[in-house]
Image (tube, rainbow, N blue to C red; front, side, top):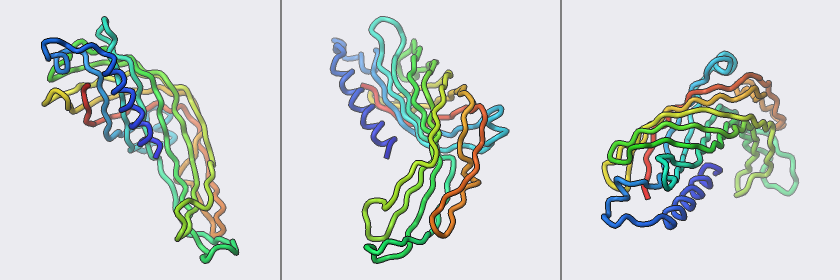
Length: 236
């Protein structure tokens, strides 16, 4: 899945950054110094303003972030990735292909939101408890895709992107990392994202007919949101 690939990329970047940093001679740098951090966990999005009026439902998903410390300033630079599910529909539909032994398949339509944000994190304390504040800037991707699967086939018979819209996004976040060990920590953060107006599929309106034709209605609004992240992480 997309977010799995992103997590693997974060891990690779974190390992590379750690290899380039000098070791602390007293052995305390990993815990009390300036470590590179990477975390992942559950994220719940709460729509705000016009987005709450238009959509109004919580968005449950996953998020991950990686931050690499600057050498002098108490600032970390990194990247935040998020995936959230808005909803979808699933139906058994007719399949008319002579080369197949079956005449029905399962058509799934999913609407998701992906977030890609660069971050600058001010974290003056690096210890067992490390609070921080961030500024973020990037884009959010509102997408709806359909996939037709047939029993006995490993790959989908048909894939289609029904809607795909990008919108610019900026915001801020506050969080805290609590580290019971040198390498492992728990993280809680709240972020506020201000995204512009965008047209997106209303998953509650998705209809799939017996022949596999997908229809839906769209909504349009600014997409401000408050995200709550609870996760676990590693310090390098």
